[in-house]
Length: 245
Length: 121
Image 1: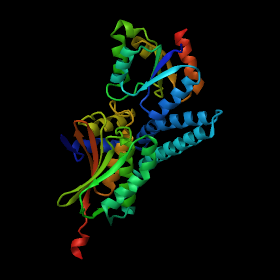
Image 2: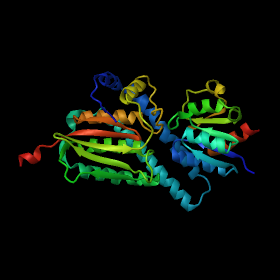
Image 3: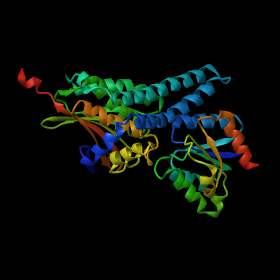
Image 4: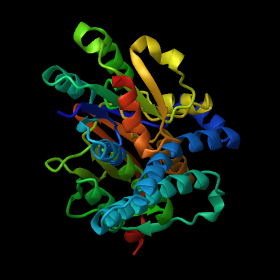
């Protein structure tokens, strides 16, 4: 198992380039092509002479695919938000994860997948911006959806150390490169944003957006590579609020 | 007996749409999103044609094209690449045994079956 933190100095170089809006717009447009292709095909199929059950199935897929694409687009647009307008608050990690799982469950079910929450009995509260954290976790979930099975559901995990709470999304997909963040940065800088070679459905721009959103609330995202998959995680500061009571 | 088309598409729902479009035109469809599994399927039951995206899990589509070209019996299976990557051209792909390049941002469902028929003709 290899643990990587994203606080690598080299990444700062790539990130600064990312902030060039025109480059990012090109990358995001490229990234959104995949769901748009699917939406178009679903729309064309809807216009065929089909029975009611098929019409409902296609309409459901249209809705879920458009929601997924909108989440990505919204995350990219949030990257340029002013940090000062994002309030941090004390949050319960379990409650946040349950909300995320609740939102992702229709998409996972429609793909024949499951997503579950694994946690210890007592978890400390953490400091985060609720909206940003949910966006990051939803993005991780969107990426993981293709890399689970009935026997091996995607797992959200919550762990804690002395001063951090880590929320991860564990999948069972093909291996990811150890220098994933660097690769993603360089691709976007080259205006060639594309899914990871070994994970065509994994959103490069989505992961870059997750990292930027995490920075906006002074947290970090990272990756743990496993022999049979990966865990994308976000580290958040433990709230000291309870100790002051 | 209907012709069998092997469809490799990493997006499950897009693959479903391709399958439906082909089956409605009388083709038998086999599916996978894994190039390694695809080679096993091709060895077990050689398809009449292959429709594939280049962005696939694991080894990827180019790896599969290389593998297909490496064997006499698989090198002759016509391959149709279906992709949104507008930067690709047939010139890039001909040496990989690709017979047709389709842009899935503009194609219609019936275009798939027509493409298969054209490479089988």
